[in-house]
Amino acid sequence: MPAPITAEDVIHLLTSEHLLEPDEPITPEADLFALGLDSMALMQLMLQIEVHFGIVIGPAELSRDHFATAEALAGFLNRKRAS
Image 1 (cartoon, helix red, strand yellow):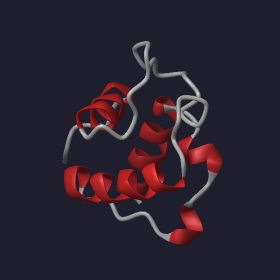
Image 2 (cartoon, helix red, strand yellow):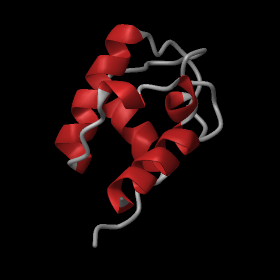
Image 3 (cartoon, rainbow, N blue to C red):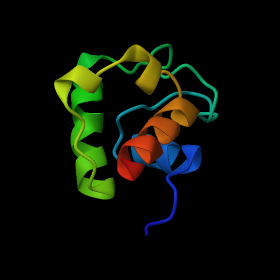
Image 4 (spheres, one colour):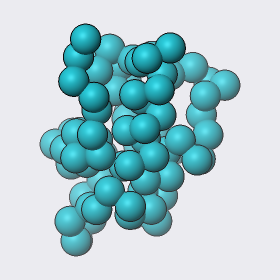
């Protein structure tokens, strides 16, 4: 069983793939939409999640709550992976 996905894993993915480039470091609780996560970046993020974690996110799962913070996204991905 793979290691749990952490908020730090999500932050690394966001920054290493240049999906977000904030002036300040991203914290696990930071509002990703306030930091610039828009619809285009969200689609790119979904693709990178599939590539890096092997998790496919369907259109019905696109919820602001799931993508609100790195912490929320990591929790969602771990729950999805477990199901």
